[in-house]
Length: 165
Image (cartoon, rainbow, N blue to C red; front, side):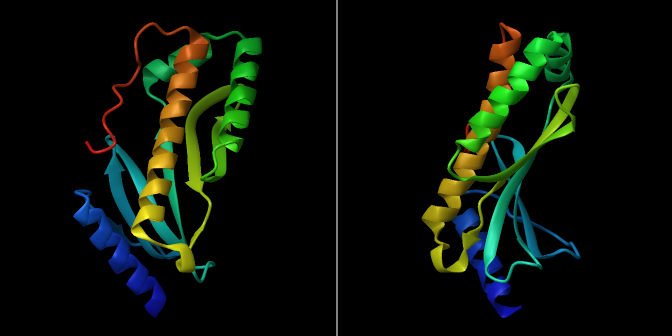
């Protein structure tokens, strides 16, 4: 699709202009799928084949072994409360379109998937792309910090790098 090729080229150029890498991944489900890193974590910027004129930014936050341990050491009531608080906090993030907690919260949690609302082509700009990317990154940081705060961690379980690292 010609429009998706133009969108991919624009996004790749914008990422490079701002010092980010843009690695292309092949997928039968997307017109394009770019991987970039922010704060050391990978983020996907892609256009699904079932969407004609929009891109999505997503991340898969895998909890570290220390974070999983913090979660498992909470009692069931604390785990349930944390999961509900996290869901409500993610729902209030303006750029978040969807999220999933895996595998079976509140019984266990190993990963959090966060994706943006669609960025439609008529609103796709460098500003919109980076504002959304930063918001999704901040949402991922929020997940980690909420877990640490709720569990009573005294030191960070993961060194959060600068958004430009």
